[in-house]
Image 1 (cartoon, rainbow, N blue to C red):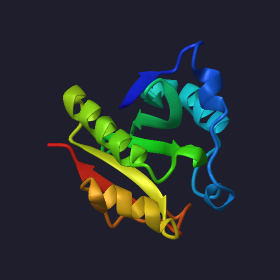
Image 2: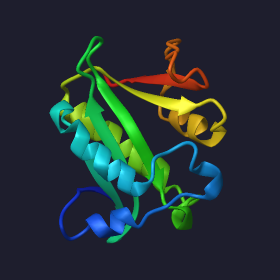
Image 3: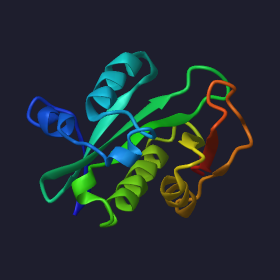
Length: 151
């Protein structure tokens, strides 16, 4: 059963050892990079979740809050280890993340920036209600900004 857990001294090494396929490394930060970004974004309520299945760490995600308008959640990073992909863990974990943000209720939406070439990730996000916001970040013109309304 998939669940989200906080990063602790007991599981951070398991999270740090996660990796994606070589073909996916352009799309997502390394596991250590995700952990580091969680620290860097602490002033934006950055939170790194370990994604576990029956006690085994299978992925990680980083959510932070935007500090400029429009205020909302930013799913900054989301990864499932290459050994556990294709089993539905990513979809289950994304559903849990969205449920968690809905319960928290600080903002009415969550955004994610996805490379246009990452068709698998785009399909996953669309399955969970994300749509193209139409915003194009000049710093990453090869990416889509997707948004999911939480209310």
